[in-house]
Amino acid sequence: MTRIERAGPDDAGEILTVQRAAYVTEAQLYGDPFIPPLVESVERIRQAAGTGLMLKASAGSRIIGSVRGLLSGTTCLVGRLVVVPDMQGRGIGGRLLGALHEKAAEAAEIAAFDLFTGHLSETSLRLYRRYGYRETGRERVHEHLTLVHMRRPARPAGEERS
Image (cartoon, rainbow, N blue to C red; front, side, top):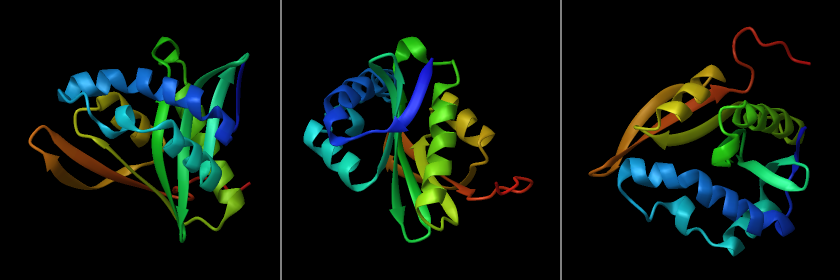
């Protein structure tokens, strides 16, 4: 049984472990072992958990995924959606993303959710599109990496407010 709940600063070490495990394939895909999620410090994650909206997915006592949301005006900036490799493909990432949408809307008047991912990250791009995100632009940041910026309105067309 997977639980999704708010993460706290004390979860930072385990979330960093999950994040590093999840982003190894991204680093290989882009040929860059120094992508930000792999070099982020536990202190930075602890700060993010204390200042933003960070959710974790747990199976028993094990953290198996997490996602971050940072409120900026009426926009929620989504980041670091991760699931441990041995649990990927089971809908956990989608559940984390959906829970973030709900929790952010409860916390503030949100008009939209923004995020970015790498242009070669097809699994992530498919997930985000399935959850109502649409591409808003591309930004080449390195010879080997173009960021795909995406946005989702807080209430996509056809979605009822509960």
